[in-house]
Image (spheres, rainbow, N blue to C red):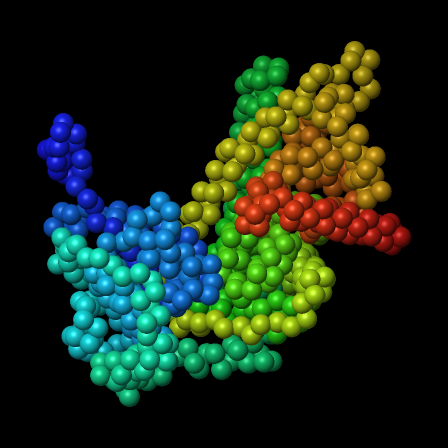
Length: 633
């Protein structure tokens, strides 16, 4: 017999009912980290409110051998939903989501250092009559602060088992697992409808929270916390924005300075592999495909992995230590000036990784118009797919020297490009909000978590996932597009009396020369035009496309050179600056447009997004190119 017994009924084998337990709690209470501990799932764990947007499911086996299904629900402050993520949690707990059965039991996860905020949700869920268990998380932090909580009395007051957990420590979930075993098998109960929540007013609920706190906790010996002292500086109206600007500036300096050595190692490795194949394969289409198409194209994208990981290392570290919500508050006044709230900061920051999670994270914004505007400007944030293009052009045209004695000129240019994306997004938001007839902005209400050191395990897992996503794109989308581009760039081949490289007569060459009519006013040649087409699928593909196009455009010894000196020799400075300006506003990739369609419910806004971004990109490139020519570039 297997681990799961079966019941024989009329010749049909049916597995016994597997209990389904939902993890529920406020944002930032450690719920998702606890979910990871119980199930082993590798899911993003962030240190700001609202990161868990959708329901997650995992499986684990209790110490007694009972298989359990576990749901990780979006963070919520109340089941009286005011945001889309709270609405998802309310509907799952109430059994209102089609295809999602109502949970058999609830584990409420609460932050031991912030019971005053967390207990309201616990009391609301209790009114539904479902079997419940309270996980008192972050008890280690509470003890360090001198906060005393009588767990037994809290269990008595709430009428449910209460166990202490430390989700970020090894074996920090053991007590919870034992308590789950004690609950099983779950009793058959008839849960009450969601209307039972409203039977008690919010004021009465808060009075009950205060009564329970007075009975179970003693914070008179609370030493205060370092968070408040740090916030006195970090949230200072003068020093706070200055600290934020310096942090962002140093991050972009590090992207170039730290990545130099690993990028050289990858470049050398790719070069040696190409040289090995060149020396040991006979001439022909297969050799051309492997050396110029696959290795030349994919290798020219792979080399930027160190820079992407360094950028994510800093962003994830700031996220995990609790700084990013402070940045949202610091930027609330600035964003309020263009009609947005500081809550839009987190979706926009997510868009620096990729516009897709940024667009999805906008679900946490309560105001529908604020949410729509945030979605529409999220792609203007400089996503990681632009970084390979920026890095290639900057390395080819911007000298590697220090300015003011200690700053990298290349890092300074990269910072300016990122800053240009932010400023343009704010300008577009201002125009859109005025076009919608919105004049005021809503005040920002956001929980500020306590500072703590980033958890190395979570950081390592998140970086590995980012690397895996990038490598998967390199091995699938980018590889496929490079093969297609190589085919279009190779066939039908040059005629006998050809005076240009073979790619000039290929299908790609014909397409590039056709597009050159449109893009010549902004300084783009036909090789750049060819690269823009596959770049619509994924922006970083443009670098690989340039590698393939220029490899096939050269002859003799030029095939052995890298892409940087090739474009430095072939383009003017004005063309390089124009292409940088283009990619600040470059029309979104197709995958992002499809997500925007799903989030907005139609093609109206994705088409509007693609249209306005193309117009901005063309205008910015035209102005940049003409001004650069006037200045002699």
